[in-house]
Image (cartoon, rainbow, N blue to C red; front, top):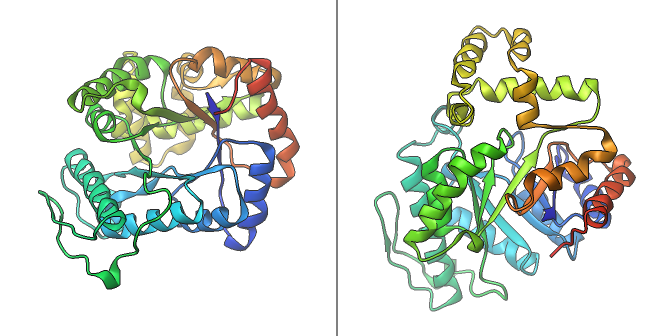
Length: 338
């Protein structure tokens, strides 16, 4: 099991110091996300200022970009990082694709699957003779002149992870990806009942197995009363979203999604955490004293997840604390990093 880290870089000028500190702590992979800032730009700096740590997006919004744009960015980052880049993609939801990005929304799982096939077709063309003739339902890419061909690189095999919640994207991951980002709002039972069987079903379509891809997730942890209530509020936010109802349904808690959704629609945010019971809180988050967290992570996720990170941004002035966590995660439980 690998121990990764998520970083937030509001100012790119601060990114190099933050990134170097993360590598020094000993994390296995550094992930960026697409929220208020572009997820790829910090990784260009990370490629320059690190030598060991892997670098990935968790996630970049796939449908905000064309396959060729994503392929070119990933190609450059893979080359600059000397083979340490992981391309993490997600669909987002219809409202954000149409109203925030001004793009079109259509059949997310089939479209993302086809985008991944298009990315690989482009990479094969650039690593080979440049010829491409990709014709799908959603994308057609048939032109690649030498002037626009970036040419071969030393490490052309770029791992692709996708994020998802429901069964369709799990199957896509199993069939055509090297990894799957499990949403932070999850339970182990949901992973066992929904994620793993559907990944296996997708993998079977391509004569693959679960062992052919990694499962990664960011984990909610709470070590004191203040953190517990902050996590409860975050769970309430996610649990109010219709897209995440499947996670609650596994436990028979689907009605909570409707109740929270009604409060969210009225913007009654302060009332929402009260609907998150301790049972739900403890199913989603690891609530324990600080010194017990590494062992609790191992006990809950060994054999379920291959990589974990904490739902906390990495800060330079907390590097010593994180270093203790990484050491405890690896040595106290006999865990090693690949």
